[in-house]
Length: 125
Image (cartoon, rainbow, N blue to C red; front, side, top):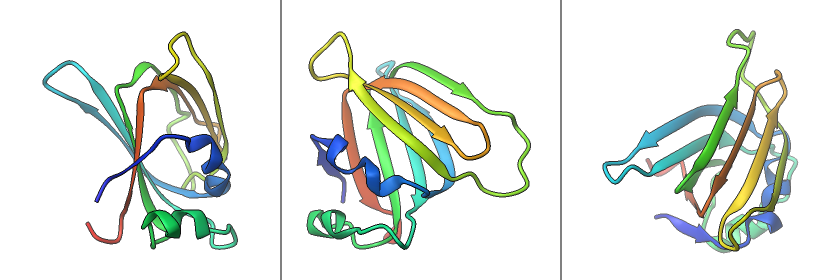
């Protein structure tokens, strides 16, 4: 089940040191772009807020809908999986759209704006 998150800023700290499993860019028929980040959360992070929302697994999919201005920087070769280092969210030109800057342990980064964020357990897929 997809759970829409209106104030993701209150939850992003939970993704500190999360292990990234995949990034999926989805082009929809209506010319929208969505992004899925599939990760395993750090076992030392307190997941209570997620559990209260119904996300019971440490394996979580973050779906980012209606992306704009997507920029991806990736060195391309790694000796292991990347971990999420920082995730910053700031205001943009539109009140419902937020700018996201994500940096990973191996030097990769994502930068984009999006309108909606959904979470779901990866375990049930």
